[in-house]
Image (cartoon, rainbow over all chains, first blue to last red; front, side, top):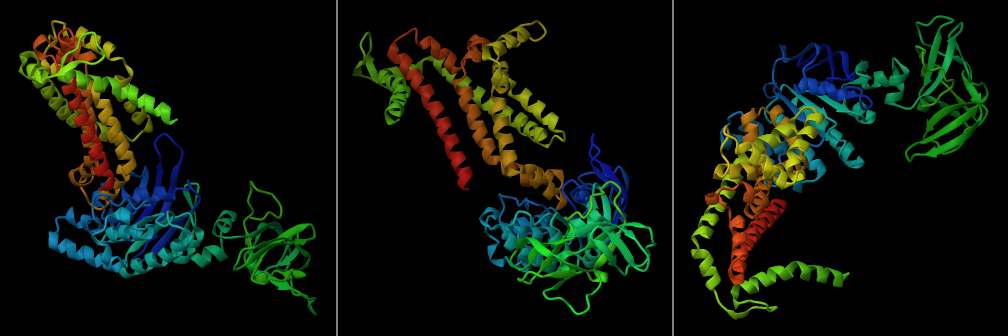
Length: 355
Length: 256
């Protein structure tokens, strides 16, 4: 395993903030995204790995070696910072060649390698330009080339796309993924953008309050979140408090729902999760109503371009629905397999809350 | 608006212009403008031994002040900038700015008290003068360097250089020094300009044989007006040269 965190804890001197009991392994060529709200500890994990801080407890392992006693310069990790941190007084090529220069590579050799690397990120014509004359996306690619040119053990990306505008951000995701695949390098990508994480990562780590809330493949954490926090952080969701009844039933404020989740017993208190895009819409009365069928009417209607997100009023409660359909339905149904039962949250007992 | 600006500029320029005119005037007593044209005042200033000595002293003091400022200011600014705790940064900045806030007179009396004692009998030496100038000018250099470090994002640049494998030595030579070369130069020119024109502190601390140019200049005003004007114009030219050099480097730094 190129990167392994073993029970790593760290608190910033004089504070309670930091990370607690982080266990994480990143495999060869794997891209793992760390997401979480600001202050959840995702950047701290990266700084610990880079060597800017030392863990208070636990160990960090890179390529089978403990790195906790190593300084940042001897860890051989390629890092792309949020603001790219390109050296302003060097040309683009010299920036990319710098890691080779400090390793004593001969001038001609490092020029050749830097040109190759610039070629790989599509900037072969811009080697002589000063970094500040490049666009944001180009600077980002220079930073990526510079972080990869010395064949590091792993690549660390610290919110590398947050300084770019929305359209460019999406294009750069693919670019990062392509370059990372070509290099076949273990990568940790820190971001607060859940869509970015789900779209490029092999696995996603959701962090909350300095600890890991869940690790899994993108569709796993989206479809089978373990807690309300995870469910809410990776996407839109309907939540209802519920009590499990007999025969795959669950009692909720909007009525009795059929589900088909295993492993719950009658009487269990649960949190019912339904993703808004999983609902079926009805524009006429069906001959035989499906399970979990609700008549009602649209209240709030929000047009978002590719989809529409509306609130559907049902018996004093609201179901949030997402659809491509432009017409207003007369009824909605929740397919039983769209229902996830999560452990109830102790400190939140608001009923029928949307997020 | 224009009239006010014009009047203000005239008010600023008038004494300087008068000095210039006066330095070439043959005689100037009791009239608004001098009469006659002569360059003898300049020749007199140049041949006056006490002015020659003062000019030399001033150049030595300026040079040493700049060298010492670089040797002290650069590492100090670096240390303040990389200080881990923000409290340390703030404290360091306040302490380093004190010489600007404290009246020079207070500083001078402090120097006199400390260095006229039997244990530290250095009052009147050129070295003490240099030290006094360093104390006075270091905050200006520190300010310029710290501002430049912040706008460059030097901590981030160094951090990234470290992750790319650069040792402290490489980082300092490849990243810190080249990054700061323009602001160091601008800062030193400010330092030189202040050191050249400094009067209060030098007047109290300097020994009779290590008087700087501005201190000797005061004596000139007890003699012929033309002589005093010529001597002042020389100081003015020096100061303007320093300021112009500063402006040019600042511009070069912006475009380059």
